[in-house]
Image (cartoon, rainbow, N blue to C red; front, side, top):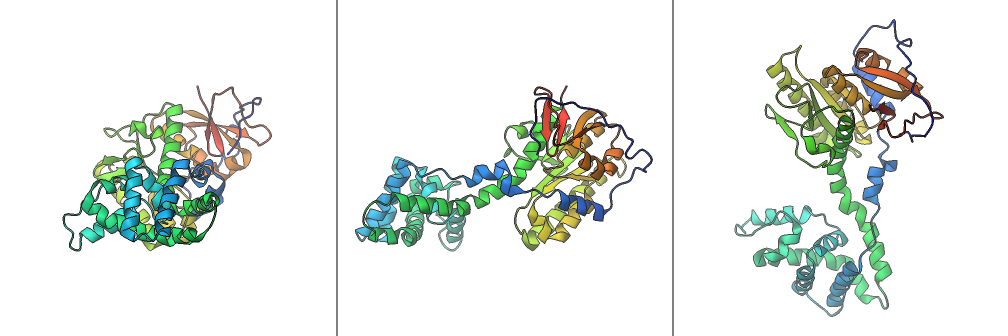
Length: 382
């Protein structure tokens, strides 16, 4: 990602680099090489940093956990500890998330386990949609409370034998359990983060899309087009021109994930062709990234084969170019010289929709706030 400086210029490079080359679609091997060359370094991305930085426990958190430690020290049983937890939740129901994190659970784990319990003979057990409502249902809490208490005991029981202040130890446990607590949430939001970044770029260049709130609320629902879910559709569902499916994997996604990505992309492509025709179907754009695809080459191969075009975090500018092309618009794009050369085939294919300007790291374009960062590139705003 480039940092925009205050002084430099946009100078179109023209088409001299590839003027005599034929307009061709990249081979699957070339696409895979492009993916590998631009794979997302999530470890240094601000998005990742926001999740990884765990704030210290609040005084309320500390006090609630100390109450549980005191109950254990006094010989309290699991039902007794559950009553202490319930008392604290009546005071502040948000404390359930601290209790779950310290116990090494996730917000979904306790709910799915309770639903499994309900399925084997507790048909009246009410399982709310969020853990912060568990203590409001006596029958449910009778199960959930002891479940949580037994797991908290395994973590906090050693502290009941420690003399003196426990604040530092509790904070150490807080920091140690945080990565596991936010792992599911981060994974869920990574894909949404990708489509949100593209949506923000489309808003900046005045390209319409649905759902319209995706730029402001990444978790807003997807859209359905002929019973297929898409993360973004340009410009609308009446006359769709670009359909986007976003997938980001920063860990080994396993066989199921591999099959799911490829199958979903294949289903989307077949549906678009079936309803709009081979030659007039909307462009299917895959917004994919993450080191997880490297351990599932077949899944990556399936996506790259089925998608008309693809982009990544570093090449997210391609999504704007494809959208502009389908709407018969033109954007001004700044790219480093090496990226221009890398994407000659793509840029030549969309030459009517993009004016390409050369950037280098010593002269990153700055136009007094008139630039929209777009991965390794920038887009000049009108």
